[in-house]
Length: 106
Figure 1 (cartoon, helix red, strand yellow):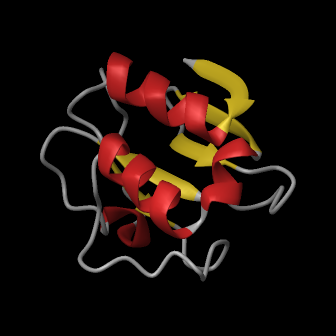
Figure 2 (cartoon, rainbow, N blue to C red):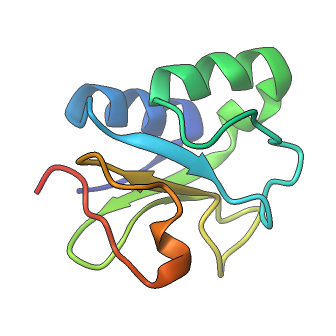
């Protein structure tokens, strides 16, 4: 799955298509998103952004879920690194630091 839209639309599409997925922000790309805890659902991320970083919801975003990556990038903010990692299937949201790739919906 690949979608180029606003972050808000990407989060809504993720919630609809992959309801079991959770999201973890990349603090190196979005340091202002200091969330308590670890990964959260797309609807929780929408609510958090509406309350704390409303401007980000209208930023162009690229949602990619394939055999090699599961992420949302914000090309206007960082071309090299994803802004959010996506996880499904009950895996730890910190496995990306160990070189694991988790693919949603497979």
